[in-house]
Amino acid sequence: MKVLVRKFLENESSSGIILIFVTLIALLFSNSFLSPFYTDFLHTKIELKVGTILEISKPLILWVNDGLMAIFFLMIGLEIKRELILGHLSNFSNITLPLIGAIGGMAVPALIFFFFNINDNFALRGWAIPTATDIAFALGILSLLGKRVPTSLKIFLMALAIFDDVGAILIIAFFYTAQLSINSFLLATLCIGILILFNRLKISYLSLYIFVGVLLWICVLKTGVHATLTGIILAFTIPISLINEKRRHISPVRTLEHYIHSWVAFFILPLFAFVNAGIDLRNISLSQIDNSVFLGIFFGLFLGKQIGVFLFVFITVKLGLIKLPVGVNWRQFYGVAILTGVGFTMSLFINSLAYEDSNIFFYTDKLAILLGSLVSALMGYFILLKTANKNIS
Image (cartoon, rainbow, N blue to C red):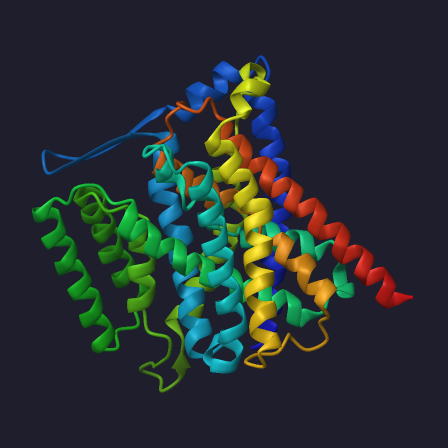
């Protein structure tokens, strides 16, 4: 299990570093003579058509956000299932600390955003934007400190981000769902029933799950519910452990996770960042930045996340209900609490759902995500670096 956790951390850390460079490239494209090519690339029409039965036509950016991100959520679902049944989160005592931190880290940013946007109903659609943590970016920052950061602190951050992802999934399902199409909903329910049947029959062929999962994605896309939720549903129907025809123990969950993890870390997330982080900064003025959405997102990420995570855990520890991770002091914990303000890809994703990629805020909503994540990353890194140097001396 330690090997699996180490490999997970290494993959996420490498992906986080790549995301930084991809974001810079996207900003370069959108703020130079390459801007028209970048815009045309994002809006390239891609069609999927099967006779007269099925037709899906979307620009590239939506294929990435609705399609490839479903694979990202599939990986998240597989990780959550494995951790809950076999991993670090299978022990109740290990769940409590990151769960409390995640609750605080979602509640306080949402309240800060609500405070700034209380009088604007449309702006309030973005209340969930600053509640997310980008595990790839956050672990990427921690990886720069190497062994100077306790492994228990990295595992805490990973577990907290997983609970953040669960919260994001619930938010997407309940708050960012359009009007339901009953026929598509019934077909989606049928697909889910087939997947559950596969699980009950202990079928180990991943190709069958993937085939029905693709059909489920199409049905969910047509229902009005966001199609990325398909990944979570599919993940939880795949068996964690089976005995094959050769009487050997196999784990379809681990097998599929192994196949898609690198694709997600090194292709899907970087591509998502490239198509979503390209903000045209040339026409953004200081007067445009001074709006309630920008302030709610920026302060929600930078102040809300760190205050929520640190305060909720601090109070609970002082009450004697939980303990800090082994080998971790309060200064180190505060540094990691700041890093949870790195929302980036998850915040950008929720932003695209909340405002449907409209330009009503002149890209200042996305700019707030980038700046809030950047300031959180830099401050968290330097606090952890200073703490690590003191420990070394």
